[in-house]
Length: 324
Image (tube, rainbow, N blue to C red; front, side):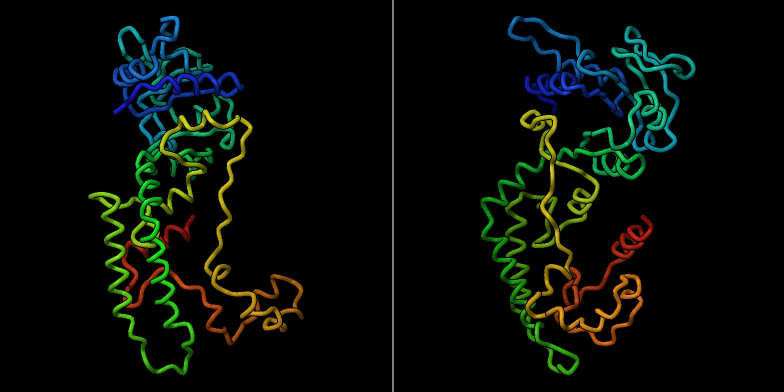
């Protein structure tokens, strides 16, 4: 449900006063878009004056048909606000502030507003239609709105002990395999640990509500969370949070380590164990060398638990990732 919030007006005006061009790009038709925007933006100020909703935007495009908009798109037409009908034929010439358009394509739109991919910060709440497509197809910077984030943060703070317990169980599970090598014949008995992991994970899932967490499945990240981190430059439960930052602010994510960086200890694997590579100063030549013996503590592991097999969806995801 769309709610009125005076801070929305302040944020839009703040963006424009700092030299940014603000546009509305929506799949909704003109009639619906106008009804929603009037409800949200046409709020009387302290003097009782109500501004028309279109004055908060430089450009307005309805019926965009995303994600098609980011590919071949459709014909760009002008909408007559009095009748709600589109003009005959496609629009030519520059976009006019205050006018409402329908359809179009990202290629035409960015040419008309004279903005390259990295110049645009696009805010949306649909991971595929808004964020993934705009990032991959046209290189826009992206801001993903996730309303469920408030509940996720609340559970993360109030049930942090459950997550810590999962981490401890994962470490205990790994310890059972830590010192095994090619000569190990007996299989560790980890049934009780795996059972406890499932119980704690189920309790944590219930804390998020009926549908569970959208970011985590136990201690593992969901596919949605992986997509969010990969394709969303920033994310929040509301775009209004931008009002609390200066326009020159640089958002930076914490440094992330790959499995081989986070699990291989510098103490257990001193640089002297790779002494033979010192004879090959060229990185390309180093990568061409064949290492016949790899210490067991140098293997980076995936998220597969013992007994699990990659599903067809996992294989498709890996194949898609290779093609990016």
